[in-house]
Image 1 (tube, rainbow, N blue to C red):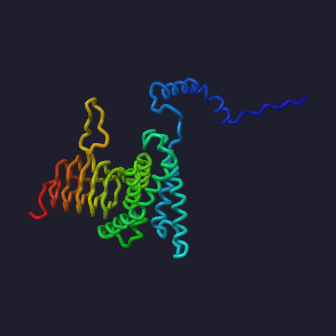
Image 2: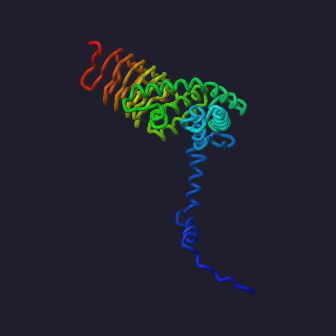
Image 3: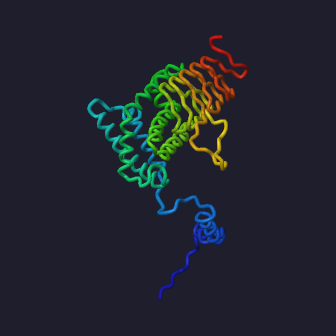
Length: 314
């Protein structure tokens, strides 16, 4: 009978063999089960569902952006004969995947859309989203032109389109805002967070933003859910359009969706570091200086600085 000579355990094998005892894994796993299932449960009752995934959503955003701007984000060698085929392919792949993610999100969150949300409903919602893409491209072009006019360092449109973080954030927001309006709010929020990660610009998908919007530099910009921004508005880095306070109901619970962020009218410029809080209105044509703190309405055509507030026409 042949006897096997016991081999010496490698360092990794020895460590893995000893790990359950070293870390008291049996006790730790049991304690986490109690927290997960009983004392701190946040899971819905019923069958476990797969959540939407960030990686496919990133690919969807990239595909949609390539379809909107095929020669800038897609393939530069595209010509009149094959560009439509390229756009069609990118749209087909992206929209199929988006429909799947919308369906997955609706099932996962439970009350995301209507009860009993079906795959056919996700397809219809995606179809409505897709039908707005030509209009969205027009809005993005207005944003692109605003950046070119508003930034003396900008030499051409391609530089802005593929090189400015503010442009990337705006493209993502335009797409996320449609999804938010259609009711796919979890997907819209994830799209916004992808933009936040990529650019350092945090725009809630619920924020309503008019045409010709320009975010210059952009790092640290925060725009809240119920903010309303008019046409031809320009803002700089570290600007906050936030809430001043958070109203509660009779039981002390936060009231969700209450209008609590600023209204910024057409033609306003907001310089770096400005903090504008509450449901106030910044009047048309006003300029908000850097590092100011604004919590009251600003009349049209005003200049607000750290030292004083005065009328442009005064």
